[in-house]
Each structure stands twice: as structure tokens, then as C-alpha cells.
Length: 163
Figure 1 (cartoon, rainbow, N blue to C red):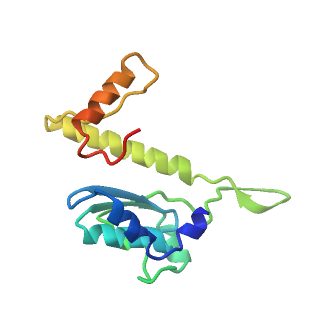
Figure 2: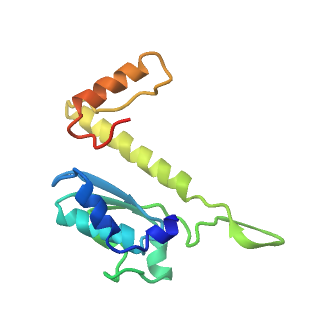
Figure 3: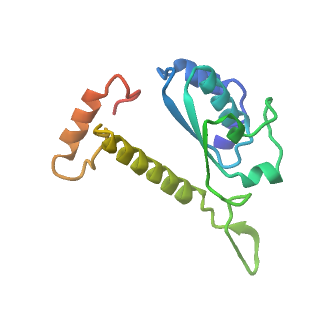
């Protein structure tokens, strides 16, 4: 389903139109290939709305594939900041004797680590400026749920979903 949806033109615009995201907000778009309609359209439409866009993608795809979208471009071309996760084309890091298809995708783990590092850096920069970063705690530690409720309450105008 995910592979089919990322090829539907107009979906990103509809999602953004329903979102309370506004000029100056930040949107992180993750797409390994960065070549399909949804991530490219999302970046284009987000920037039209004045959002800043961070794209997490693999630059390797630009050299080994063609864009598959009306803009004839890759996600990275429409981002303010690009994090190249360095994943090989096909997202298969392993091969084995007697195994026809390469296997062992690494994109989820690498992209997660990149985003955790980005969050940690942003938190450190905010703290250095004297701003307490609005970080959540685990709900499985004493006081965690209460802490999180307070963070959600303090930032309810900036949090576009509630659980």
C-alpha cells in the first residue's frame, strides 16, 4: 500500500491542506529513493506554504535512477536541509551464497539514528540559548506520564495531534 500511495499525485497537497502547519514550521520528509510523487510533492507544497523542509534520503538514488514525478526531480532538490543516509540503492546491505535477492535493509535503523542525532543536537542548541527543549519522557518511568501531559498542555497550539 505504501508503494502505491507514494505514487498518487495530489495526495500530499490534500494532507498539507488539512494540516494546521503554517509558515515557519518545520517538516521532516523521509524517502529513501526520493524519486516518487508523494515526497517530492510534499516538499514542493510545504515550501509554498512557507515551511522549512528537512529531507532524509539516499543521494545514491539520484545517480542510479530517474525521478518518477511531474517535477522530474528528487526530494533533495526541494529541501532546505538534506540528510543523506548513505543507504545503497535497493536498501539491501547483504548477500549470500544461494540467495538470489540481496537482503538486509538498513534504512530504518540508519534513518532513526540520524533523526535521534538531529533531535539531540536541536535540544542542545536550544538549551545553550536558554530555552528548555520540549522533550517527552518515557511513560514507563515514575512521573513520565504527568511530565508528558504538562509538555502537551504547554505546547498544545504547536502539537497537531493528541493521544
